[in-house]
Length: 123
Image (cartoon, rainbow, N blue to C red):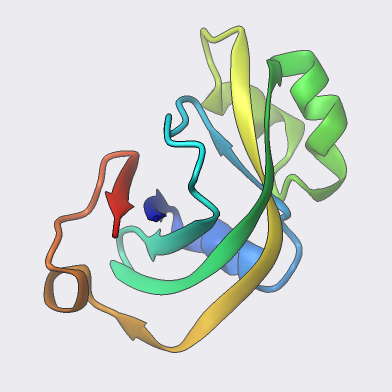
């Protein structure tokens, strides 16, 4: 099983160029069998542009999470804390291997789904 994540285009591109090795989430999917993330680059791009394998998922308090991930966060510390505002803990999906599609796909036409707010399970 795979999961579809909505990711801002600028961060999605950083994943595929290897700069960003962690994708941060306030909430995480419960299914532990998820090994692959399909990347939906949200507005203004609105296309499925690739996928990545999950190495591990880190759940920790924000201070520790930042210390563990900051070298390859793809974001600065200020943005990290703004994203997790009013939360004590967060999640970081460690990216094992990313693969960008040659041609972007359409959620509506190719997957028959609407953009998820956070994530969506795919078979």
